[in-house]
Image (cartoon, rainbow, N blue to C red; front, top):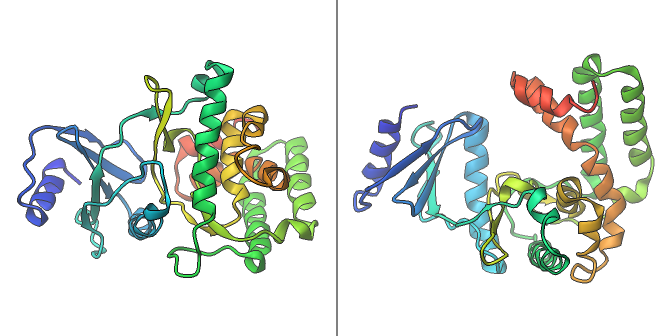
Length: 290
């Protein structure tokens, strides 16, 4: 799609929006992103899968935002009822901040690290406590989680093992089999989760030393809250996650599952790359296995 088409679409639905400045990020795999007037963020899906994700994200945000203290995207300009690429979009006020890089956390004082951990623990407590009865989105419950992870393992073996050296294949097999053979791993209380809780989706204000917002709820669904803990464990390490224990009740009960999930993230990225012919994702996901 071309920038002119996106702008024409926006102004046709929202003619009162005066566009003064435009910054266009069209390098993403799933969405083209327009920053308008240094004030608004507009996302246009690039393919059918990301369009469905955007539609669900918009519904999910409308549902969860009243329960959340930290800033999250607020859909203001919305056209998600269409299935036509180039016309489906939503726009929200720009949330200031930079991705919370591991280097930022590691380079901060102990007190700031503790404050960041508290901010993130509070967000997850609020998110995971939201009632699920009327929540939109996919559900991966106790009854379906075993099959989900078993099927994922089969896909990894069929699609990726030919790229992976033998000793790493054995480690991956053991990683999955230990998890799948312990039925207690499928007795969690399902909750609304972010689903992609890592560096690029956690925004940080380096001046105020505060988490400034949480973005990209495209992977949000009802599932195991340990998946969100796993995102933090993978990116920032066990010592940082331990700092959350005073602010997230029973965190230690989630950690064994979180460690398993964290050990699958690279493989999931590689599988995405394999399935979508994305060589960069394939190679990045496999770099510790080849």
